[in-house]
Length: 408
Image (cartoon, rainbow, N blue to C red):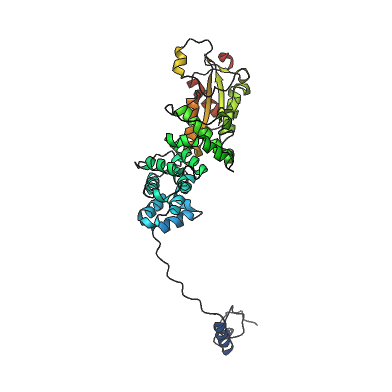
């Protein structure tokens, strides 16, 4: 009778003799055999040994700052890393290239960091004699975009001197600098007189960036009309003016799928009716509005087909003079502009409007349009169309607006 394996008296199988082989264990040659030793020596003679890695040089503040700014995933770095790198940098390491990278990064990502912006302003003042207008336009870009006027007292005098020195050298750079100062409401009269001079306008008409320069000059001329009553220099001729922003801005078109505009449009359509508002209407001198309503003297929202939605530009004498006059030709109709304030219309901290947005709202208000802001925090808190309609109703009624049967 066969005994089961493992029972007493059964003979255990003899374990195989184990030999250490080279490779995966499938080879037939021991790793210490003469053949493999000869092959290993041959391999070493043919393949040069890998040299030891050189010692990495120390990375100082300026180099670390440039390396971080050049990294495509820079947003993963905390802002304190930037500030620390800047503080540890030696003066000779803070080159125009590094500071331009920093300025572009702050502007692109809407980072309104006072310490970093003040550092750029100080650098511009200290290096004034070595900087040309093409570099300066990049350094001042974040100040206008982020709506930040630096505390550096020599910031404006420095820029005025650079504009006086460089204005005729690079027309586009000159106008770009003035655009940043326009957003800050700090336009220097002397530079305006130069860019509105016939010689400057004649010079830029034959250059490739002619259209964009004329658009910027048109905006600067609007700022002079609305914000600088004391200016007495030349102005942009009427035949040279073009619409400033004839369509929604690029950032709005790029983020349209995240915008609340379609939702607000549907809410207004159900609340007022399609005939009582206009969407994306461009008003003179070229500002695109989100939604525009015409409101009668009694507060009733009027059908758009019966009204001229545009206010005259240049604006008529101030509203106080009109209110005191008894002219029967005075237009009693108000134009109300609903302004979407999306999340990307603000600096990253979510509290300060970007310079271009603040400029548009400021100019529309000065032209006589009544503004009704719709902040993104309020829009994001609405859950569904019924809540949104209730929200819009409250907003419009707070202005004294009426519509429907009770609105006449």
